[in-house]
Length: 400
Image (cartoon, rainbow, N blue to C red; front, side, top):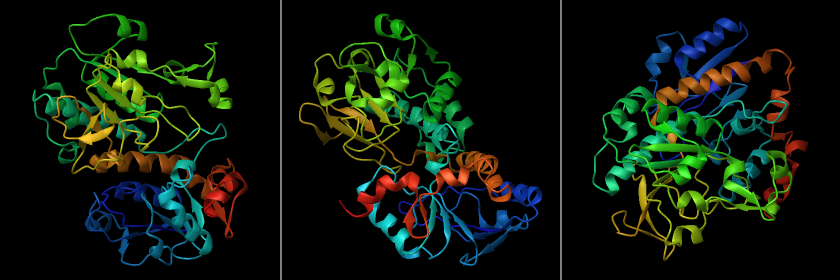
């Protein structure tokens, strides 16, 4: 089985890669039939020489490989027919901007696997960059607060050398007594919690967060059962929410009244209710100064996420009264950080971590007959058609 590691072609440039040089050496040792070529790249966090020094072949053409692996989407004109691809396709939520990508994948008889669709038998995601997005999201939210109120200046995360340096810079700060609310208990939320704990910001219960004043910065970490409620005010559990989302509405306004910073790390699908609405943001009781929307679903559950921002220009202002973008220093502006590729700011750390997950959860399936169904569940297209699991995308492919 011959694998090809593609260079990233999407703009803005992304320095991440699925496998570090050391990870590929480990795979070659573990699986005698594992063969790999790395496509030359001038932007990758690990230089070509780092692979070559460890005996990994670096080439300009990987079209002879069976399985082609990338992080981000492949430009449609670069897709090679009749190949197997792994990358984040950003199609499974019927994202309009990538409809053509999925159409071309089908036309070219490509077997497409999406990193996001690699799940276990209980539909839990097995790989992703979420933890690293959580790391950078916390750093950027605190950096944004310092910029907005001219309290302190932090360098951009992308200029630092990994997670530990982020923590060192944050630990140097003397913060005012901020209240920070984090939504989402998955990889993103856990990553955010890891950084907040590392810099000694105290975690408090929801009740204490909502009712008490503190002389130090604190945070509370909430999940679906905390930021949604049934419209009929009946009790519910997670399964009830999943099966009947239309019966729910946001219960987040109680947090907007006391929070300085909101860090969103939740998973959202198109059928879920909004979380932070225009009405909440327009309320005179709204206390939020910074929204770090790590999930970054534009025009989704967070009303102030008007667009995604970039690593180069990470912040913009949101004026609640007019629902429009303004300068971050506008007196009534809420600062929004909505970078949709946050892990790119920690390219080496996130590449190493992602490769470890891919090695553990995906590569064995190629050599054990997919005994756990990993590949079967993750496959979006096969023989020029959508697989049964993803047949719901047919109207999206058809442009309906």
